[in-house]
Length: 333
Image 1 (cartoon, one colour):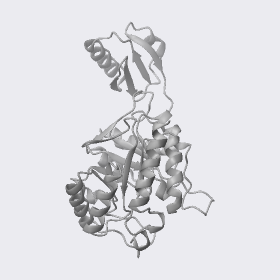
Image 2 (spheres, one colour):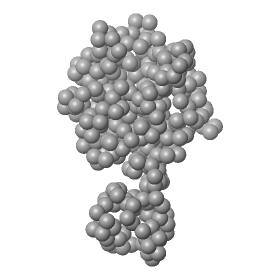
Image 3 (cartoon, rainbow, N blue to C red):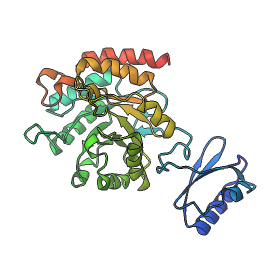
Image 4 (cartoon, rainbow, N blue to C red):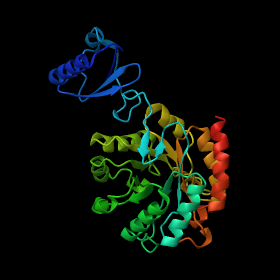
C-alpha cells in the first residue's frame, strides 16, 4: 500500500503518522520525499488496513493498494528516478552512461590500454571480468584476485570506476575496492548472494537471467534492497529463445517496461545479447532509442586473440565511432 501525503505536511506530522501506522498494524513504513509530495510505502500485511479511513485523514492526499510483490523497487513508492553516483560518474541522471572494457582481464598492458582508449572515447566506467562463469569447466575462468588488482591499477591510471562480476559470497572481501559489483545472469537468483550484497553500500549491477521474467528480475533487485542497499542498476542482457543465429535475444521491450514499473536505472548489454561484434552497434542504438540509461559494451584491443568472448567484442576504434553515433541519437531523443 502507498499513501501520498499533502504537500503542506510537516516533518512532525509525517513522523507521528508513520509511528501510528507501525504500532497499530505491525508494518514497516518507508518514506520518500519528492519535490511536490511525500510518499509513504507500507510494507507487510496490509489487508486489515481500511484505506477509506486513511483517505479521510487530513494530511492524506490519496491511498493506493499495490499488487506487485516488489515494493522498494516499485516506482509507485518512489516516483523519482534513482540516480547512482560513483565518483564523478552517474547512471540514471538523464545522460547516457557508457561502461566499456574487455570480457576478461588478461594482462596489465591489455586492461590499462583499453581503459585509456575507452575513457578518451567517453566511457565513464571500466568493465572487466576477473571471475568468469563459463559453461565449460575447461574454458578460461579469469585471473580472479589478480584480475581485480589489475583493474585497480587501470583505475589508478585513468580514474575510471571499475565494474566487475562476483560469483560467490566467499569472494566478497576481494571486492572491497571495486566500485560497482556485477551480478551475472547465472547468479540473478542466487538469493543468499543477493542478501549479502544488500548489506553493502556498493552499487550492484544486476543482470537479468537468461530465462527470467521482468518481475523475477525486479524481485531479485528487491532481495538486495530489502537488506538496506538501494543502489541497484538493472541490466537487460538478452534472454534465451528458440533463435540460434544470435547468442541471446535482446528484449528491447523490457527497457520501457522496467522504466515504467521501477525507479531503478536500466542499462543494456548488447554484447551478450547478440554475441556478434557487428550487431553491437545496431543493438546499442535501439537500446538508447528505447530509453536505456546506459550501455555495458565489451571492448578488446585484439578480439581475434581474446581469451574470452572475442566474437562479440569490438575494438577501441569501433567503440569510438559508436560513442559518437550514440551521442547524436541521445541528443535527438
